[in-house]
Image (cartoon, rainbow, N blue to C red; front, side, top):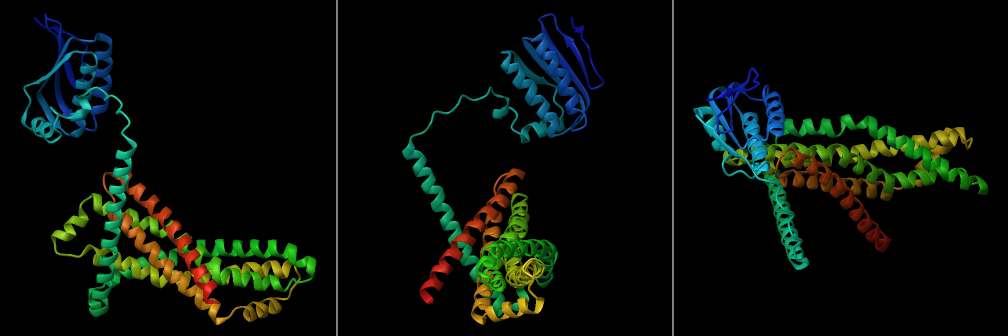
Length: 381
């Protein structure tokens, strides 16, 4: 004969003569009720520590993944208390959901696994080598895919998704102008102020304009603009493509006969190549304006003298050099961001990791290639 126990609107509890606890669930077992059911039953099992628990699912009218999670936790609790767990009278919908999540064999209901023994250093070295080799192969394949996609667009311009490209130009360039203007103005102001402290000692105030102009146009302008684009746009590229990858939208493009590189990568790279040099030009102008403020207000230079000295300092070579570097950085930032997006695997956390990796990789490539370009220029003369 069964004895009744405290129940709730979502279940009825009873206990058999043999000490077996029976939970008869009814109604909905979904996201709305799972937390309450799990909280009540967890407290009950911890207090009574039954030797056996039977869950009756006959009266469950709606069941989803959260309902399965409740059963997982009950099974885990009974396993932790060394008690028996079984389910009876499972209706069709719970049976289907439990089969999809492999309830009978899933590891989640097992006791926490014992810590794995540390593997041999040679094994870890081998795994790391295999992983990096695979990544290098994927990177080389992606370079080839992007190159072929550019060639296809070159010979068949109609393949380019113009609307997407314009949208990316707007997001990458137009929306970034305020932050580029603010950072460049402050950076130009700081460099001018710091250099003025030394220049004033030698009466060479006018050369503050030369220093700011050269530093911004040839070095800091392209680098800082690329860093801003990497942090703001590169991470967005990786997150967008990464989200499409884990939601299998990229696979769907393959299935429908679309080239994902042509569809997703080329518009973003063309937008970056168009926009980053323009942003760099804005950066240079606002930075020089920041230096002008210091020159006029602190060094007591006239605006015309400062601007004339800036124009005399800048040569066509310096401006072309900075322009070329900005294009190279644009290619690197957009390429590595799209690559990190395509490398995304797993769930939502992987998208965040892809965005972070895109920014870090972009910064590394920007500094690396700037160093290479500086060495080339040093030998070039």
